[in-house]
Length: 213
Image (tube, rainbow, N blue to C red; front, side, top):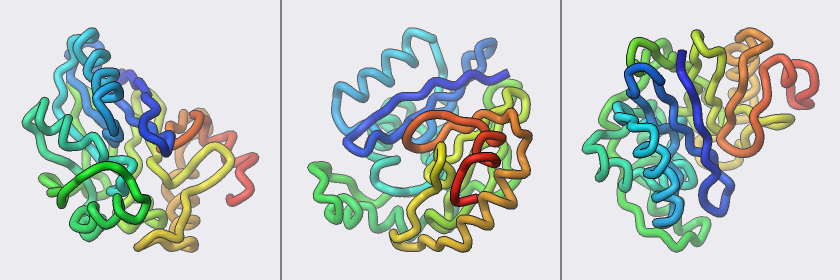
């Protein structure tokens, strides 16, 4: 089974996750959003204290708040980014995103080293995360589902009581609703939901109370 640890980073309250296998100590960093050395040290300390070996760096989508710390993790691990190809246009315009929000960070174009498609597996030790395509917040938004541990990392598609905004480039409200309904609400009710911002929840709770669904 896989374990998950969340960290809240940057001024957007973005959630960065480390998913790891306690036996093999293999791990993946999901949405590295650290914007300063203190936040980077918090992530590094957890990885070091748990003796984890990072095998994957994954972005659920390529918005600036979810990749602020990408270069730090790449430098530490020598790995490349894994993401959906439909967000590649956002990776080329990442500096524009920083300027749009007037962020005090300098970030260059981002290269996607592995294109993640629906149904792909991200192997972590003897376990894996399954890639689910959930476009709408961005064209390349993905969720990462652990069947063995019954959790899903939803990025900015689904939140506790809400959904992702669709007014950014490539966003589309009807597409997002269909993505969530078809691809996330089909998961078991007891599936834990770890979103890109805010508290965790479950698929069952969102099925019952989310006003957008």
